[in-house]
Length: 307
Image (cartoon, rainbow, N blue to C red):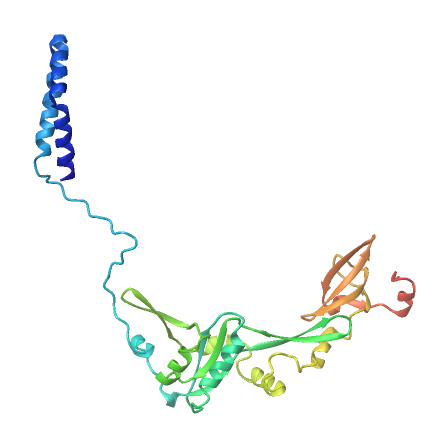
């Protein structure tokens, strides 16, 4: 309709009386070849104008939907609990418990561990045996005299669950705020992505993870579940430093700094940071305890210039 209106208006403008008179005057004064060209142009314009009044046979272009208009699309409705929607196979309680993995944001593993223990405290042992976050103790120096014990998570972002996977246990753990997902297969239904279905760890996978069984239980029994290390003096961890302490003068036995003298400045992760003074500059390097030896009193008196 818009095309017809536009072309009709153009034709009406061209065929006004004044325009027609001007065209006639130009046509009468033009040479024969030019007259032929004018006739061809006039016939073309006339044909185009006639075609404009005929209905178009071309398919109409679909209109674009504005961005602020919401279009309702068909989707699969997802109602009910996740256990029903995922169609998870329930474990047989007579087969005992198995290890499962819950994923969370790195750094909140111990908080999620406490949440798991609280919500599953009422379940019997044959359904929920234990929850574990494998940890390690690390002794480091803080200043010259103070020692600090850091407790670090072995596998960041995971909480290990030894459970019998049934509907009640799954829904309790799935609804925890810090729990992101279970380690397992990915399920899809329609256009929506469902959480993974939990899969248990096999025996070979369990052996690869350290601190799931006896080692972690001994750790919790020794420190009464204190994962912060505030009440841990770390006396048993001092043996890894073979008697070295902050401020002690030592000699380097091997490596690029062999035969250099220095002072122990820090203890961390079983290594010692030694500060060396060479040609008016200081260098800080980490060494294993067996890569250095303490200076004797005579060497210290000679100004840290051992033989």
